[in-house]
Length: 350
Image 1 (cartoon, rainbow, N blue to C red):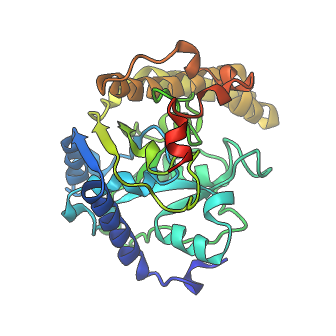
Image 2: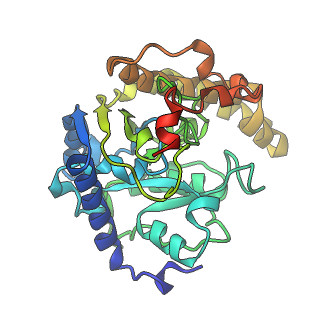
Image 3: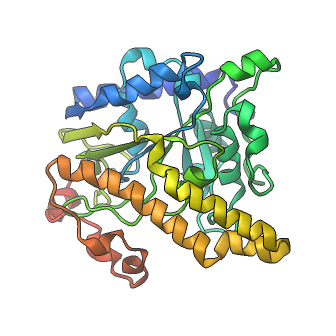
């Protein structure tokens, strides 16, 4: 599937800008939307485009809860107009291959919307923590001058979807002026609609980005509420239409200081050095699934979740149950208890 066969490259700006404008109209025209801390995001976006700042050379990752099938792009409708027309400074994100890349049209649409295809293990043997697109985004998150320091597994494009990475200028001066991409991720890995918006545990992909990038990324947590009612999981016909008339709140936290990750990144370097000393397939296996490597990824993912949880509590929701942050809770088949809001009839009839 080749995106150019359906949408030309020039259509990317038109598609993303139009989508963001429609999101803005829906949020503020058809719903009651409040935004807190937006300046925390726009400050980083401005600094990313100023050559010589640390933001212009650092990976930028935003993370949030995932409560609706159209969280993205809807949340980006809060951005001021000047940020909606610059693709060098607009988010990339990850989308499930089995949902977003099912045919030529949807593949073209999401590729041109700066969405990267990811596979889920329950749908494909290509899924998992070490699928090629994670390595690809690690490269895209690394400043060109640091890419020779990036140690990942072999970087390959996923076989069933062809997409175009952002162009890299040929001259060294132009390359140094190009910031790494801004990546938004939903670390829960799926839509989750809890009665009081508790979150699932965060999956480990976010830990790979924080631990493996040559320099620590700028991580900015977000939390939103009300969007789960726009396209609730229990909605009836017409399911494809978003529901207006909601009270929506989106909160942006402050970017976490890069030294927040110093200890875990130091320990990761030690684990990597120990695995390199062992060498061969055994060393590679231990780096991927050894106890120390796994514990570190779990710890880092929990650290990121805690920052989003702080915003959730600050937004007026009660503290989460401790077990909601544990993968074991969902392996025991208890996740269905968290799926839908208390007032399910409201959505069943909507």
